[in-house]
Length: 428
Image 1 (tube, helix red, strand yellow):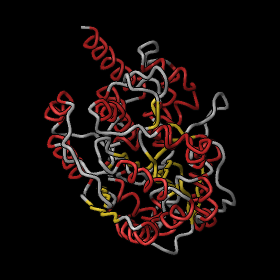
Image 2: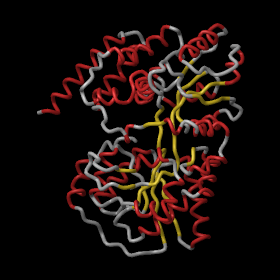
Image 3: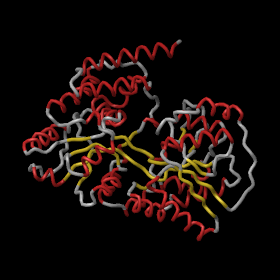
């Protein structure tokens, strides 16, 4: 989730007030969103919903996401949030909206009919919108959002380019991946590209291997300050970037590329492998409809622990708890996440549906992404998260390794210094 950069101090005043303007019920529902690629499809579905129910759904787009976030902050300050909207932020801010009475608890609706609605959706997607018992935010246990699609991040491979290099099957282990890198280089094909000019993408890639090498318990222990970043396992994670650099795996300029440029490189067949999310399916189709590619998990380097991939709800809506049309808004979201509408969204926007049953109607490449959902994880469902400044030091350290400025051991030491400093600040 993208951080809300501005207006949080003002929003706190709204949270402290805990009041909302009275509204009159109507046969209209107002939805705000930020998803440019889905807007036209939302409008079509809204028209269909009106035909079926007589309820008018007005869908308003505010883009890009930063502008949308500012719109939500201003609306929260003025107590004029719509009936349905999304919160693009970390779980602590989600919790603040709930405490302010700006988000409805949907648990009863999900539990109705023996939990039929809840069972229809991917559990990994619901986890992002769920607050469990004894959660650190003090929120009443329940489900507070509705995922309309899901996403995960995996490796992509160009079938044509691999065939040119004599590679019949995508690599299943890190060693096989290195052999593929060498084969591709021999015939002048750049092996790998990703948008690592955006730090979060490199962080996702590293976390895959952190879980694979040391397991979730040790990763979380590190975040708690019980394991230092100078531990040999963390140096081993960082050393993957050194090894890939030394083997010549990276397309030139990988640490300065924004993701849209890396997506272009892969779509135009300038590199045989990429690391990206399932949203890329729509991007690649627009850039090169004839691109022949497949999906695979990042090749594991260890058998010690299962490799986990980043994934969960791609986009979620919440219902305004103060809305006079709350029940109508919930009914609309139930309809939007039913199989028929999920199939329409998946086909027209090329995103993974949140509804399990709709997955049978998606394209083969999206189906490959869908297979990875069960092994996905996401910071919003972790018991603890790392300090943002520590994450930044780690990710910038990865960039320094890739361009040869620092060794993995040097980066690990730098990150640990930041960790110690931030931990000390937290104890004051």
